[in-house]
Image (tube, rainbow, N blue to C red; front, side, top):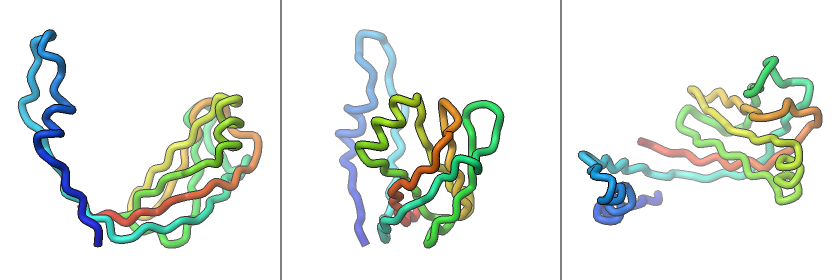
Length: 124
């Protein structure tokens, strides 16, 4: 089990706006999360599986080992990042009770992509 500790003072410094605009931060909430395991795999995003007529497009993907407490992050290769940039395309994931949806923002993907995925189990 890995436990992350964040110093309160560094958070306050990071979120306080400059004094010159006259704003103050009333409350800072620190969330203590435990990271229990990290898994690496791949996910296949199929061009013909995207749903929607306008951005963001979506598709539900089946990723082995995902639970309702999984944080799912896509980690494209450098080559894929260049392609996505050229196509004005970005991907974002959402996990709702163990069902992972990938959203494509920008143009609707016309190619299949296999992208590395990192699954992190977190407990709030």
